Length: 515
View: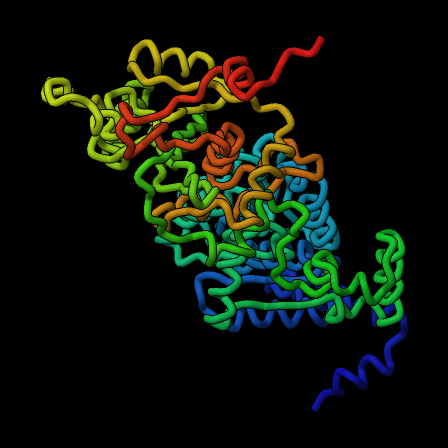
């Protein structure tokens, strides 16, 4: 029998040991086995991936775990193991592809033998292996760039930082999933938990956890960081935030970035009060007899048209949102007008009383002579007290002139202050929303600021907080102090005592003019 490997290595010179290592690495490259490039935690995740045949595998981990390196190893292994294979690798932006993904793959393949080493083509945006396999790279900045990931089929699909891709649903359903239907290809998503409420990646993680296809790792699972170094990281971040270590460890940032917990960044949530008080605020309310109706429109270009229908409930001192329209099909102005009119008639038809209807009201008719009441006066269709829209002057003109439906453009300056006015009302329990407003519920739950400057919302799945803006416009134009009940309602006008002018009243009471 020949000598054991241990005996051979024991007797070998340093040069011979290095030669044996090179032979071993070359063999690993030829077999597509690159586990030796990974640390212990990364190897464990890799083993979990290969141990399951599920079509989707999810990695939810803390920062600095070497996630991109691991995902890139999986991409390279797929290309080595299956000649002519196609791997599609997407990142949050095309900039991240250039700065992180491409250099990582080049580093991994730096010691690959010639017959295994890929070549990157800048113009085509992919790595090509001698076997004909390819790694196609693309960014998910927008739909146009994401569409570069389209192709006839994919053996492996990878999405890096999936929790921060605003159009994740579109990328998965429209760009990537069709490519794996006939190939039996698999999808791997890796990311730190999203800071955005109701992000699609959160639901994907929950589903993967239930299916046993989720790998969850915290900073304490990183073998490249000692406990002492982790403690230093935390202490440095706490100091930067002006907090004690104990205080910092309770923050959403620490829990999300270090412990990979699914917590929302409340500092970016546009209307956090909705999630806090949703159960109390999402209720059906009986409409009073007299009320001021409001219609609010946030017109879309590339985004949907968001329209809300509500009224100011004067006795409750509350805004009630009764219904909504979210129009995605690019309707023209005339079509929008007809849909609005139809919804107004459905909610507030002539048989229902609005305080601002321009016709002889029941209250006025009650005290009038028989001959006047019998003239057959019929009320016109209901008109809301006010319709408001975004500062789209052209659309407002078209709606008024072409469709005979008047919208008043609203001011949009100081958006943060306008949103704050909505938040105050909601905190006080004075914004009540019908359960039928499912889209408004979703927009209030998921809309976040694009950044700390709080001037615009983050775009997600082709939506842009459209119904949130419609609600903000309505709140901004409310006439909260106006009582919609007609003056003298229920009283005979002939019996009403009208107050005298102030000078006559003073004279009657004996007041004299000062000299």
